[in-house]
Length: 145
Image (cartoon, rainbow, N blue to C red):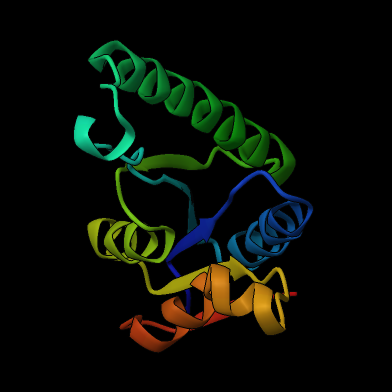
């Protein structure tokens, strides 16, 4: 039924459960498993806004740190799954946008995503990436709490 499963990971405890569930589904269905992690673009500031300019090397350092962290997160997810899963790192997008783009890129027929369960003001400020994926995905989405 599910031949191409995309599992979103951010390295959190919830993402560990996502890896376990996605791996169990992939094993049960004989499907391919791909993990995705997304890093957002670093904020940019105009010199007039902050009174001084940020050297471009700072943005290069942030990008390298994001790539290194993403590699570690993806490697941990693959290890936790116990499968020869593929990995995708999407840069400079909001998490839900990157997850949806990766789902299209691999032609996924199921997305597995975690929900951190933010409520109230925290939900208002952070938004719900899982809710956006559920709302906008073209394929079924399994939400792990």
